[in-house]
Image 1 (cartoon, rainbow, N blue to C red):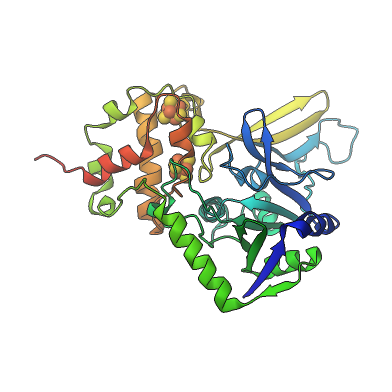
Image 2: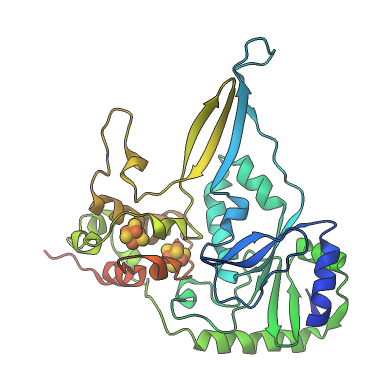
Length: 350
Ligand code: SF4
Ligand code: SF4
């Protein structure tokens, strides 16, 4: 492990050098808030940002992506044979990613890279990506990441964790990918390992103290799936939901998608698009039957997946990193912290 001090005066120069090797992404202000976007040309990441509306997940798992294509032109030799669309999987780096969003990418990875199945689109994109996190010195009011096993200075999933020390950054290199990035930037001022780690610990503890929002998940495992599934509170939880899907689209751990074919003249493309369990179309079968036809069933599915099914299946905590985006964005104030509390404290009446 290695610590490097980066004077903010040298930051732009070092980042500029990395552009020869890496395609860069980072927080950029948009009319709707901060988004993690491509830093084309000489755009610099706005590192001092409160939070991004969407997470960095979309850089690896885009909202829409071409998977396969073919031609319907029968004069062509390989007509009607679907082939993988060539992807740009050259090295890329995401700067200033929130630590909990890097942990979220690890959670999504559990779905796309398994012993039985490897999603090549996700895996190749993730392999090409270096994640450079920035610790959160001042967590926002919706942040409850300390309750979800992440926190403002969590290192899981990151290649480099940086801390903002006003006039400089202190960078902790966590992986070979992180080292390779630092090497091309030519940031070379080595920092003392013991002192640097102590500083990171102080910043982490200070930031964690400022997180006032918490959830308890300690009793979720005591309840059976059926107990929670059949509990009487779901109609109340779902009452005000308008099934807009916002909570799932802003969530860094949601991984649902839909596949669609689009044919134009003789060219056919198969796309993958983000989808949402909050939409009735998501589960409607070709027969017209819908196993989750009601709003209550869909809202229950979202919370049961995040707080019970995932919890039981992987034994790695809940499928939530505590970023608070869904709480902040829900137009009717449905709050996963409250629902988690209801589920955690629920006792079946005999
Ligand atoms: S954001 Fe709120 S209203 Fe929209 S689907 Fe999610 S819980 Fe329902
Ligand atoms: S469920 Fe809500 S708080 Fe949890 S990771 Fe998703 S958006 Fe963030």
